[in-house]
Length: 88
Image 1 (cartoon, rainbow, N blue to C red):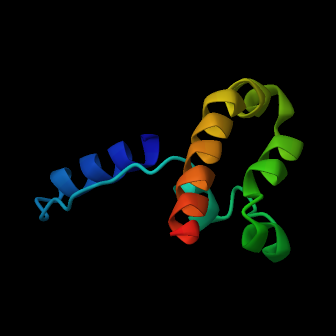
Image 2: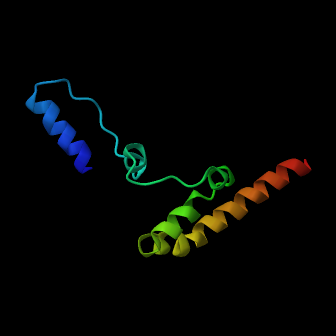
């Protein structure tokens, strides 16, 4: 957000057109290289969250560990839908 605000102020000072800014979480950190992405095999397996949890456990544990319950229920619900469609 600070990067976006700084860019906005700089463009405004120079009377340049102001683009639409989207703040998409850590994507800017990955883009500028301040954070590294998970290894490719973890990305392919959908386990990037595990990589981030290992790198920043104090920040991530609550979101990933405590938030798993509702996500797991949603996953089970979707699995049931998939299997019921295959039986038809």
